Image 1: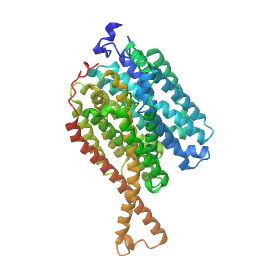
Image 2: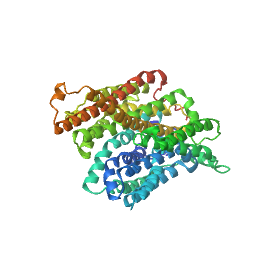
Image 3: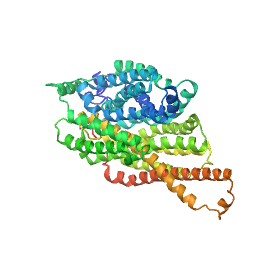
Image 4: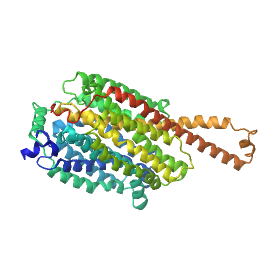
Length: 522
């Protein structure tokens, strides 16, 4: 067993922190990827089912959106503190608790008799799901040496990148064919299997156990103020981002109050955690320029990935008459492209500097978003599918190398905190991306509609032939469609610019990371 634990080629290097024990580390990578696929899938699978949920539970469409918001809020709160929780509870125990909580709450969501109960169970589900990804990535970082981390994160990245693509398709099919309740109930057997495999396969090393004992020595010292600031700050921020457009942003007293509370809480959180001896959120990690830059890259990745995953199906359904399932199928080809590219990127991480791979990935995203900037209501299914394939090709060049840079050179005890922050930044990027996209869609729609209306009058050919009531209605509908399409094009243009601007910043600010670098630090 000792030889296996010290075999870098196998992935179990130095024998001190590997979760594989005498088993293959690739088996561990598959086991932890299973749970995160389920959790990431759940962030998008409910989107297409809200109308059915509202109708079945006698709620309005607006009230049903809390099914999404409640999950995102609780998820956002637990993500940044999950590293600390894993340290004081024990990594394996905390991970299994999260899997169990996610499974039980999924069952309760599927059986919920009212919207209020469903929202409450979604809060519990978000708490369980939020702790999964940071624990899993910490396990991978400790189980694989730096030279093999790229390939390990490539395997894991399939779950993170492909799941949001499959979510709308799977959710639409389940809802249309069976019942919305099954979008939650399908998690239960997966959780049961994941819990069994984690309990029997994951190895908790003596080093990890001693770290947990040390954290508990003299009683668990809880950063109560830090926890409160995280909960209030990120919870309020998520409400602002999710409900801002719907309530006309800061013209709403509720959004204004939540915005002020979020800003003050997060500002105090940063100041407090920099001074506190044992912070619940390891803000001091951001003092490392390369780590901070990798977190910014993860924010941009989440911003682009999740906003386009939201906007493309919406465009296809609202303007081109696609069903939820058809819109999801148009994005599924991108998931297949990611599956193909992940192993290649995992191999390239052993040969090419991560900063160059990240820059290349951002350049691909910029090209893909610029390509989307030319879509019309006449495009074919194949056109949008290939556009998504182009974007999907770039995503592995972001997720895998960013993970490598984030962990490079960190002390071994910091992996839990780093993974928590990395997942927080990806989720925040997604929340900001969706919020900005929805806001732009509304504001730019008004702008373009005013511009188009101003160019049409009774003396133009377009206006001269629209004098009857019916034709005026048709003209109005045509103008609305043109204005909406132009708004989507503005969003894709902005995403292209964001990705392009980030390319030189990554080249300048990210440090060089050679294969195998960081081994000594452990």
